[in-house]
Length: 249
Image (tube, rainbow, N blue to C red; front, side):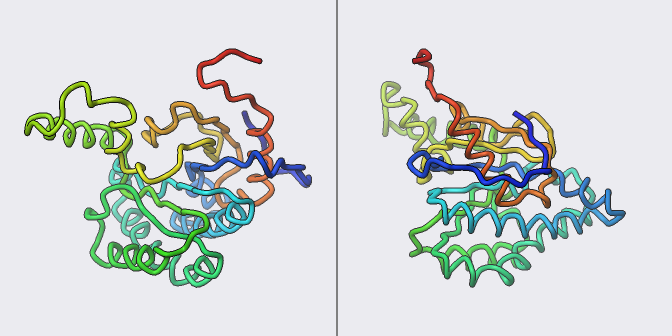
């Protein structure tokens, strides 16, 4: 499902059918900057504003969790200067917006391998998590140095080790048990996944968790994605019948 940015519409959302967990693949920052003859890093800078905008609006609408794909395990293949800049963005983001997120009861979390980031980046994210830990509103999770296949392999290793040590039997390994070893074990199921920029792939983002989520692929570049796009994505979600393998009623 595609839609473009040229919208000025009030969507009559069903407030009893708001997705509990929305996942975003934040794509198009570099292309957005290139169109303006600016470096790719400028697009990443502007893209952080979209995270703030959507987090506050999702929180207002009653969305329980929002997960954003901030940096994948494969993103290390990019130019070193771009990677270095991305690792500086958490400091910039939280310096600008943490107070506002705190005031709106947003809780910060992360999934991924934060230990692979520079120490300063680790400390900034850990401080944001600590300061927002008692908040009970939207859970804003940054997938940072995250890879979906890596997550599944790591969960499998942990479970195999438990089996090897005699802590569990093969019959204990169910889907529910496996999910409890994923990085997202404390988050609600993903109901809706939105990818910006028109690309139609998951790029190793939450492959297990997205098994029954609704997908929307939006042609808008991430820095231009705003509250109206979020409302329309939710309206499209509400227009679908989720059957989870059942039959159409």
